[in-house]
Image 1 (tube, rainbow, N blue to C red):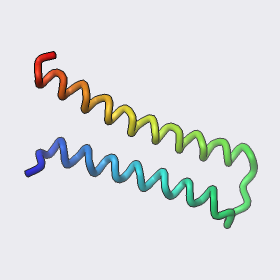
Image 2 (image 1 turned 120 degrees about the horizontal axis):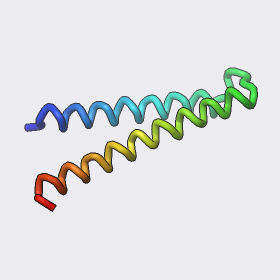
Image 3 (image 1 turned 90 degrees about the horizontal axis):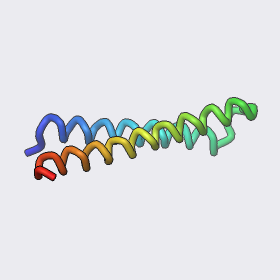
Length: 70
């Protein structure tokens, strides 16, 4: 059985992954004509979301170390 925190983390990661996929799809389909500043902005958002995923992983590692007393 998953704890609330584990379930929360998993769902948050899924939401972030979905947001990344949506933005990548918008950039790659070319359905909307976008200018370079808008493109850079969207790429920056994707980079920020990826950083959030990395921070989730780092936070999990830190918490696991603290549980083991290291």
